Image 1 (tube, rainbow, N blue to C red):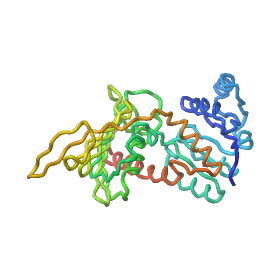
Image 2 (cartoon, helix red, strand yellow; image 1 turned 180 degrees about the vertical axis):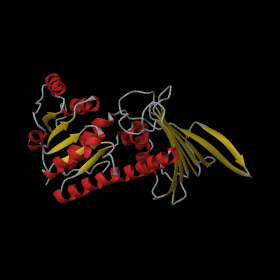
Image 3 (cartoon, rainbow, N blue to C red; image 1 turned 30 degrees about the vertical axis):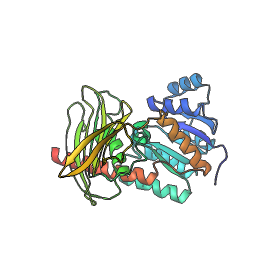
Image 4 (cartoon, rainbow, N blue to C red; image 1 turned 135 degrees about the vertical axis):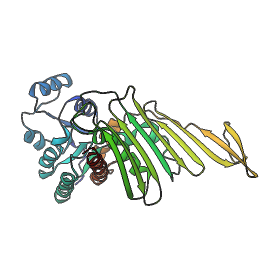
Length: 327
């Protein structure tokens, strides 16, 4: 049933949860019902800072909400979301949807039985540099993605595949309209008890091949994507929010000022350089607005529960391959 102005609450107000609060407190299309966190002192501080209500129990917040954003540690995603779903509430779950495909499937079943929606917070899907190429016709043959980050203690409760690489698996499955055929992977544990560096090579049934590298002990942050396909090469820097496109076209068929001649086997073609316009918008705000619109019945989740489960299935498989190799 569509809801005109949904009441939305936040479960978990840590580093990321506070950003949910910041956006929801300003959104005119929703009524911000309040927050709940097991850390009562943290919850009271956030409630005071943003002049919102802090509930003493999760059930009280659920009862006063139509939808909830779940921003708890990954291990708590399933139990928390199930409490919401069983009471007929819509949920926005920060990535990954859960800590296992098995528990993710239980969430999807419960949501279907309760007639509610699940949205998953794969925020990089809305990175402005990625959105800038949405009008190009993509049919990639090879994709290379790097996501490197300096070490911090935050996020180390899960392996790097579920912490960092899962963003790029989501982007990859969005780019490639085919099912996964084969995966090979390797990785190392260096700073923590779980995998800190991972590399995966993914082959799809349509012939596309992808190379993904993730590390959380790098010197500098890197978030880059390179897409190769016939007559086109695209580079995307998600940190600098910069996209560049190189296309091969027949001579005189381009209106671009930036071209280079390409004479090959008697053909007269040009390499055209294009820099798509970047529209700077806040991806988290866009996600939460999409969640509100989906509850209203005016839209569908950008990343559905099923998509989130499919991404997790690939990530889980990669992590298992690495663990098998390590042992």
